[in-house]
Amino acid sequence: MRHFLTLKDFTKEEILDIVDIAISIKKDFLQGKSTPLMKDKILAMIFEKNSTRTRVSFEAGIYQLGGMGMFLSSKDIQLGRGEPIKDSARAIGSMVDMIMLRTYAQERLEEFAAYSPVPVISGLSDLFHPAQLITDYLTMIECGIYLQDRRYDNLHIATPKVAYIGDGNNMANSWLMLASKLGFDISIASPDGYMPDTKVLEDAMKFAQISGAKITITHSPKEAVQGSNVVTTDTWASMGQEDEKEERKKVFKDYCVNDDLMSLADKNAIFLHCFPAYRDQEVTDSVVEGHQSRVFKEAQNRLHAQKGIMVWLHQNRI
Ligand code: CP
Ligand code: NVA
Image (cartoon, rainbow, N blue to C red; front, top):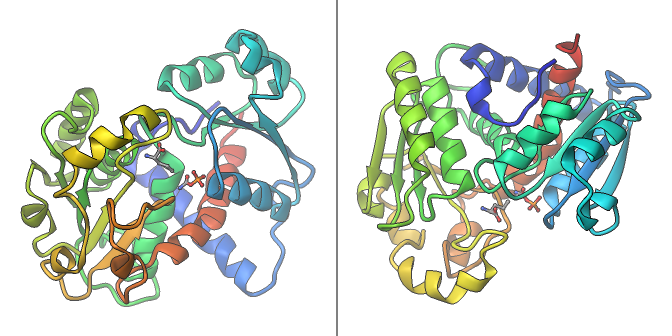
């Protein structure tokens, strides 16, 4: 049985297959056709952290696939009172068909999956946010920025070069995984001490040797953004780092994506952000609201991308 905990566990072909399922389901959705590919299936959604997009997209998504979503806040269930993961995983997994978990340590997801009798999907951990990256590649494809391996209907403008500016967090780690698996260029600009995870970077370097991805790690946002097709960033203080907020504002003050920085990217470059965004910290309001921003297309694509993930897991179950 396969789980969706990190893109590290997926081949390039499998990642592209998930994206293709998402594209096909989105097409049907836009034409008003129903896609009951998970009829009567139940998705339990366990949140140990807050969420807007992940919750709404998984819950609406499973419903539109003919199934039903069950929202479980860790504040309300026994997991939040210290019930062992291995007990919660077996009990919940014995009654539903799939489980999504948003949590802190990646190890919690891994332990949950090890004991779960049904597929487990990461809804974000401190280390990765893989569902967001399926979404972001889907959004890139729709904007004509994709690798040549699979051609889509729209005009293809470039081999993607992505610039990620800011904290070397779960989003930066996930971009490294996506780029190194698929084979596109990624430049990450982060301050000293806030670089992506060392082990993730090592893994990404290994995958890049196979895929041909070019990975650049720098302290300079300008160097990273130069000529890129996608510019992206994320909050300076992730969930769980609330106490570091003020300190991080000082450390990251030169890492704001503003119009000047965007002007160094390719003239057709797009701006992406997983959201929630903190205006005038990691990005200015003018970039979020500007003509290169695709952030609301990206947010809406969570719905379609995650249908792709759920359907792929459902089709690949044994
Ligand atoms: N991007 C994302 O995962 O958003 P939420 O935290 O609102 O789910
Ligand atoms: N890095 C952010 C992403 C939120 C979707 C966090 O973990 O809080």
